[in-house]
Length: 326
Ligand SMILES: *[C@@H]1O[C@H](CO)[C@@H](O)[C@H](O)[C@H]1NC(C)=O
Image 1 (tube, rainbow, N blue to C red):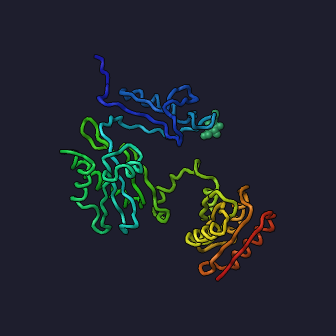
Image 2: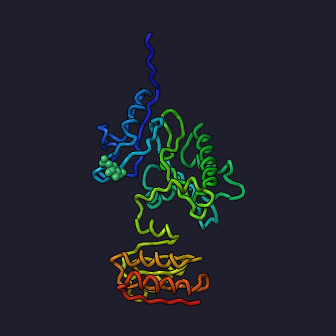
Image 3: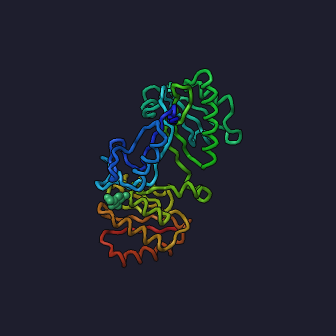
């Protein structure tokens, strides 16, 4: 007697690296392709063992590739219809809002520009949560019919639970699709998390992979500084996002162009000021530095000490204009 176990569904294995072109990539184990489909469960382990711990090289990776530490193994499904669904924080609604379109799988901004009548919104009451009638109306607007409408409505409510649980500012599912077998599935999603919730979302923030972020922004974040790179040549060193923007506007008004702005925020320490100067002066575009500090939320002496220390140690070569007030 010989038994052969064969699944009625396919399994997909996908090497998890932050680079595109994985399907056509090559592993240094010899395995070709970062994405594999199989119906034979026995092959899964074999394939995974040729992926994990090996380097995958694709068109978008460095030539030695990127080491694969995680492989996604999931049921492979066909998509018969694609919709768009998101929950995000919206100032105009003073809270979360659901946004959906039966036109999924593509760029939602384009759908909004070309066919605004295909974008549906529902404001969510933060105390009540997503009501049944709201979820069902959204599911119907997304074009889910018959039993799929209920299924989609349930998913919508669960997505809102997720949104709350992980302190998201946005949960975007594109596509929220249906399969030929009549399942509603979140095929691809992007979640943004509220930085202010880091203290209670340790597990989420521990997954942060900065390998592909702007290195200056990443370095700034280490010192609790917010750095935004711009195109001009005047570096701005400010405290508070509002003051940062007002400072950029004033520079612009007077015919200059900001190279960046670095927001110190409140509760500054001297070493942060030093780190900030190091970051600002490392940018070759910077031809002058403007410091504009509102002393109402920070002790100006700390800033002044930090600046003088930085000027001495970094041998500052560009003009520096400092305004400390408060
Ligand atoms: C594998 O990739 C890593 C980067 O993830 C790189 O540092 C290393 O040199 C590569 N190894 C080989 C054998 O190419």
